[in-house]
Image 1 (cartoon, one colour):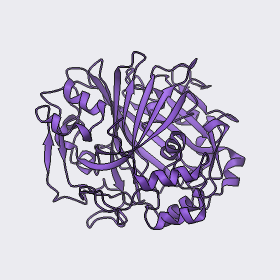
Image 2 (cartoon, one colour):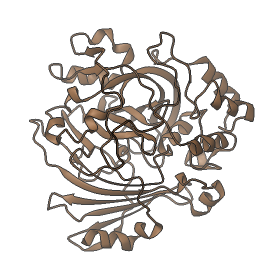
Image 3 (cartoon, one colour):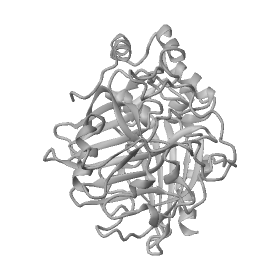
Length: 453
């Protein structure tokens, strides 16, 4: 990848870190100086098109009330330039192969409106402190299929390899608990769609303020996730429960499903890897959810370095409750006039399928935002080494937490010329990061109760 730019400061720190991510205290101190608290390069890039990180959004903008859809904190920003198929050649160095393929696949309609870069990512101060603590103690275990001595924040702010980088994505801070009403749709080639409604709850013991590595290792639970389908009627009541583990060799992911026809809860060991995603029309795998999730043991992971890339960022217009689903969902791809692109630095991580291991994806390349560890784009290849799918996460800062997280994830299937959009919430209640959840809400018995409602 000759377009990947290796930053000398980062690389020198990685090399000195050695095989394990633990770094000396003096290097961890750089998270308060040359690096941001999450390990990004604090300084602007050479030409200033990526500005210095100065703390991100530290308070909600005027006019925002908790419970509202998040209003745009940059309402006066204008489009700086637009990329189309006709001028694509001028910008290929700032795009992934998958992004370029989308222009080639939809030359008449696909475009990118590019805005001023706003490094808006921010997190609570206790998360920053936790990251600094993790930096000097966190380690991979079981060949990278688990971690230890980490809690609350990302474990590896200065990653030494691709496994550490993808664990940072998995464990990025998203609050302590979340409830959300959202949905997904997989438009046909003509653009018609059926909205699939979802009620989801997420409990994150790993992220609870004051959580200790020792407590987490005893329970071996990173997070618990529950999902219930609410519409259409033929799917309503179907439910899923997942317990994600910290050491996935000691205890693999545990999952249960509730089927309305059978009216019973069943263990679901196949809710992992390349099993089809819930009601996805075969357009994403289970481990595509949240751009990537689950045990990393089927791939060899390589950290390729950093690259300047155009990625969706501060997509508040796409998130707005003034926009309807029919405004977003179009034939081929979502409405590009609702999407904001900015230039950011990303970590590039390549995952190649191990020999004698099965997955429908032979290679995946993840482009991970340096300021948040949110996977922004993923290029996905099939067993013929051809581009198969392109995943794109449209991120905003949920400044009431605060945390940077996607508001919509879109997976484009290049070969079928279709896509699935996950997280549609414009016509639903906003995420609730304040609701108190407990362990009783995430048992098989609770799943049965949820499915029967």
